[in-house]
Amino acid sequence: MNATEFLRPEGWLGQGSGPRYVQLRRRLEEGIETGILPPNSSLPPEREIADITELSRVTVRKAIHELVQNGLVEQRQGSGSFVREPLTRVEQSLSHLTSFTEDMLSRGMETTSKWLERGLFMPTAAEVAALGIAEGEQVARIYRLREAGGRPMALERAALPLDLLPNPIEVTTSLYEVLDRLGHRPVRAVQKISAVNLQAREADLLGVAEGDAGLSIERTSFLADGRVAELTRSLYRGDAYDFVAELRL
Image: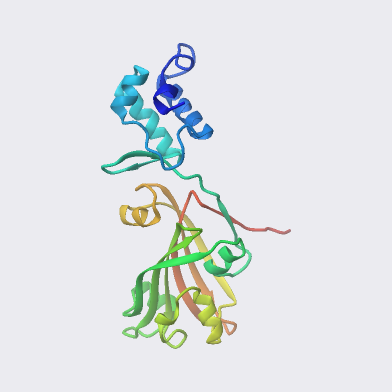
């Protein structure tokens, strides 16, 4: 059965079954669940769906908007609406200090990075305060798009004192692996987690829609002697991550 036949109103659209846009949304959800509308396939244009179902374009638009809100469909500017690839959510423990690379490798997922920034820079006021460096002293900074299993997962920006990471170009995969080799691996960290709506640039890099939910995590990491080693600010896809903490009495 193709999408046109599946969307014909006979058999699913009727009185007493709720608002019409809800009925259409449910029908489209059924098509996605059964594979009639497979991942990465495009939905028929709004006008075509309206013609097939004999519904108004306003009704069609409202049904598709709810699918977008629920993460089943994404709208690509100039291309239309597409069924999203189903995501396997990743659980990350908040009880252990590990790197993104270590987290993903433990799940059997290969990681890659797209570098957005890497080098020596003048620090921001927040970096000066967090790292305890002198004003005017440079910091090592890396900013990259983290990918796992071939899909974008997080944007990660880290700043460190120069004596801990003299050459940021050395970081090719895991930052913590390099710090471990240099004898500067952090042993504890404080993290602050906030819910955010992703801005256009961030959403584009993460492959989601502008305004989608994300998780902002600010991490301050410490060496064994108590010195601050790293200030990291990361943005995670809200549809791909669950952070889990174990609590004990």
